[in-house]
Amino acid sequence: DHSMAFIVSRMLLKAFKTDAATLSDNNAAWKALMLSPYDYGHEALWDKDTREMMQRISFKHGGPEYDAKYPDGIPTSMDITLSSGKTISSGLVMYPSGHARDTAADLKGILHHKAELLGGIAIEKDELSGFHSRLVNMIDASAADMQQIYTFDYNKLVSHPPIDG
Image (spheres, rainbow, N blue to C red):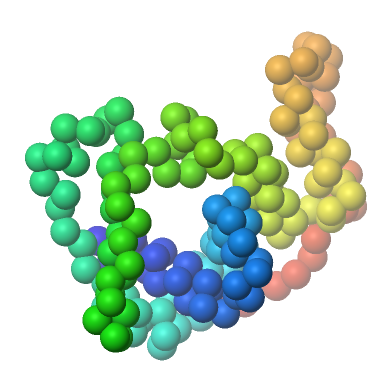
């Protein structure tokens, strides 16, 4: 699947360019390596390094053992073979970060970062904060609050050229 090879390539290349201290734990890594719409623009799609990395990626069906574990989880593993021949393996991952049954990741923190990353493309940070807070706290909203839940100051929209300009 080319789209998965593309996503993995973009994240790996991003990791190579990121200070190791920034990737100190799983939550920090998820936030630092999260892809944005800019990672899917024309320039990214035709990036030489991404395309070269994609050629090095292959997928293999996990077989009956993995099939038996789905749909309980998303049985996945990743092996990376270094140029030295050494292989680094993730081992079986049943509930990756973001899966409803994953209990290890700071899902609220990761989703907050994602809202800032994506929302920040469109809305100024101070306006986005209130907008996001209303959505996160929707469970406690009254009927009157719900009628205004998507209201924000349109003067706070961020003006910039389209991603693919």
